[in-house]
Length: 408
Image (cartoon, rainbow, N blue to C red; front, side, top):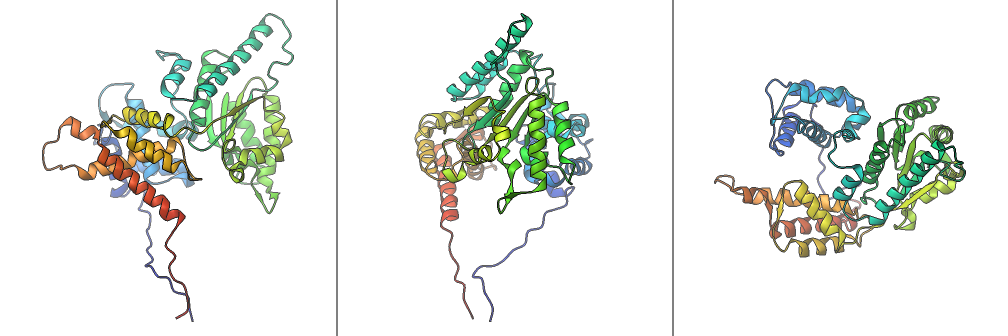
């Protein structure tokens, strides 16, 4: 007597990091931007160094694609479309700078950080207004201090709370917020750190506190995403690492109340009660909650007004042209996806764009000479097929086929 499954079982092993497969992934990711890798670049050694730096966070194709994007972003500051060995030298930088932070251009930027924020982030007008108001409060405090005036009641802590559904721009707003403060010289330095809060926890007991202290000493603006992960518990009891992290975070927030910008972010606000993790986190941690001065509540993007514009901006930034009639297709898609609990807001736009590109590539005839318009146009058929595939996949996740299980 035994259990049987009504479907075949497959095992997929990850290839070696220096394999021809991963080397081709890197070449392809670079080629999609119109760049090439010089023969002098030892791809096998480059990928080995990449995995060594990423460690357990190495995510195969995704990490390699991030490597290509980073190299090209830096290359655009110089000339040429051939990536040389020195164009990958940034791998020796810190992990945080390499994978989570955009290169800052505070001194050479042609426009201010406020203008860049307004230009590159569609919607979120109330949030952007609140960012400016917060900056002005900090400026007021500094002006009063310079004049010898009292600053009682003016922002006891530079600690902010960003709550909202997934994919609503919390991380991007945090980056621009920090850039604005850097430009205004409202912080002692210009180093920005973006990391998942779970990464604050050390590898062994006693390692977490000094790790957090070191980060606060080294960085001027710190964005802690998924802050609720700091209070992870099992059967209602926090582990020793969570306790140590929260205790030290309270200490650092108090000691650096004025000279650091700290943003705690996570899911909350306009989402289902069971997913409102940040409110649960704050209720369980009064020491943290009492040190938060500024609250930013990020709203959902509307499927018929904001999401189409966000999708359009994504396509334009990636060098794609949308065929006339595209808006009706994507509005229908975002409206349907917006009803699901796992709706990702702007992430759905990125997902749709990537799927449409896959379908467009499959429909092209590469045996003939293709025009530039054919290579960069996403037509309505591509978009409709992409939406159908995504919706079908989501429906399958919600209603998977249930294979018969029984005795034989």
